[in-house]
Length: 175
Image 1 (tube, rainbow, N blue to C red):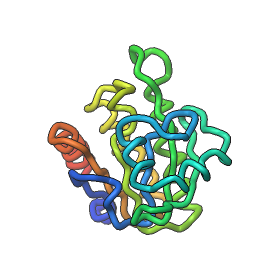
Image 2 (tube, helix red, strand yellow):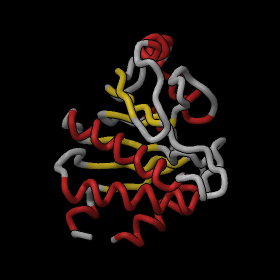
Image 3 (cartoon, helix red, strand yellow):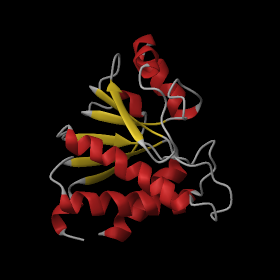
Image 4 (tube, rainbow, N blue to C red):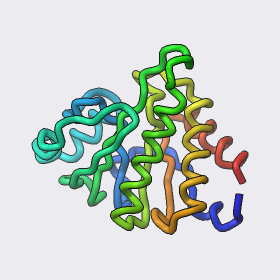
């Protein structure tokens, strides 16, 4: 991996809804109308305008991504993506997760965003193994950044010490 990419990826532990970035990524469900985990936290922090706008987006398929305004969040944009529910690793889960990351990054590049923060997609209620998900995430981000000027920085915003360690290990392993 090129040295310049090292400065374009960062791992932080904290509340993604409080980050002052151009966009945050929502690990959404297919309805885009809110749910549990990070999805519910983002909807609560953004306020009722987010769900109203999301109703106009007509849902989102697994592996795809859509964008809305940030409403009451510090971030101007929310990129909603739907990761796969883990079954056993034999139902295309890895490729669907990689696609969710790629499609989110494509939106950030199209909007020429400088900073984008991602949660750990699919590793909560969707039960995707954390270390495996972190490896896929970092691989997809590194490959995308190597060929694109935007986003200038991707922040992996983790909730909890275990996720922080896994993403940090994955980033360090990619450098």
